[in-house]
Length: 610
Image 1 (cartoon, helix red, strand yellow):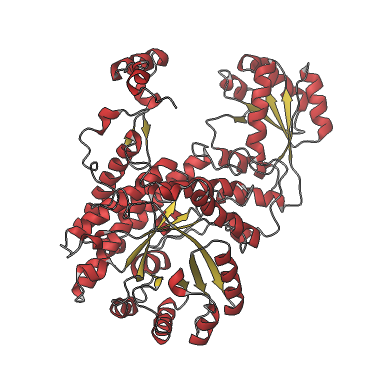
Image 2 (cartoon, rainbow, N blue to C red):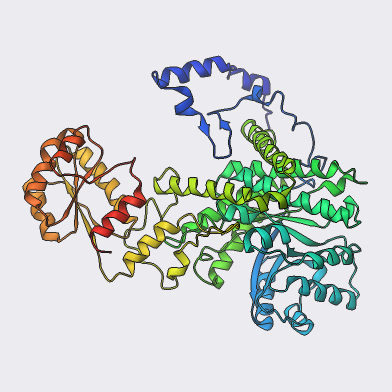
């Protein structure tokens, strides 16, 4: 077989300088502002350029190490293999055990048990774990009385004589984030210290999980999630050192849980930055072994991103989010079932969820390449930017006394709520898209019977605590109100004037009104305003949307208003130059890409008595 002549091949593609690229871009912009058009100002507080080149790697201090080497930016091991994790709600131990065994047969190698019973017993634990070979898989426990369950688990391991360095387990005990920040009351503090001591002989049991995903679920930015999680973990280090533990004893008992949002490349960079920062934090306490600086990171796809309308889109969200974590390198990965937001996940949704992880591993082979994102001009710069911004915020918290003190002052909750408010506004104005909710809805969909009002109702509180919610809730609550109102409001597209603009604006308007569950009646084209109004009145639609070109509106819209009278709400699609003139004639309803979609739709529903 002939060999490829590398030198000759690349000689066909002469290098192009940055100056040459910039010259072409400037020409294509035709005088438009480069920074405004092409530079992305992220919610994380830094700018991203439209492209990166090898020269952009110069000066980055994060380069030059291998996977498995300190500071572990490129991974804690020499590969990116991860455990496929799924969680089971334990109401009946016997039923949960049967479900667990099925999951294990289907490829799961990390099981989570969410305990619902405060009075959980050792007999129930035996029933729950019957037939499960503990050293072969990882188990985690969360829910009620988790500290009590941890003691029962350790007693079981001891009684069965299992090798202490082979049992893999973790517990969701998190007084600072889960208890204080979200639940509003500290708990399990003494139990945590006791378990930290009791689990020292067990190399692979971690009683402390820092629940960083809860910041993301409450609407934080990626930088905030990372910085606050690290700050809470550092508080735990300080606390445990004061209790007499060494840094090696503490760091090896901490597990991190992060969310993965749909910000594909940013999430890859987050996990790489997280390992880097945590390694340096632990290194500052001079551990005996650099292995203590390794971060055990569990990743969970975003609950914040999920929607109850068009829920199958959640499969796509889960897949891209899982890819971010797989490529970045995590210890374990949980893909939330697509119906997680509104019902107890079904066997089908659970199967799809775990298969998303298994396909990435066994068919895409993402577990066989160490740090595949390493060396990417873009992701290396992104990693550096996230690390720098998170470190600044981390140091700010430390200067103010650490996580607990800053939490009590209200700063953390206020900051996350401000980020959530910014996201809410972006969703309301469609600067951030949630498919099926605020853009491209399924026009004919009616909410699943399992969707209850409580599912789409966001709880707002002035208390100094975070409340997880979903970004689509405001749109979903509005649409569910329509679905359950007993009415079927309609919006009629009156297309006239320029055919191309009429069709474009009709499609935009159909999308717009369907987000509220308003049934849309689209039309190809009307040869005259009179024909269009006649058809609109015959449809008995409560809303009539005039779809035409800007130049046509000055004459078309007043004529429609004259013929329509007060028999329907008249809406003009677009923001024409003659808008003030039309408003002077009593035409006051306009929709455009600049509209606050949520507030505008709420207004129309109110006009219709819904």
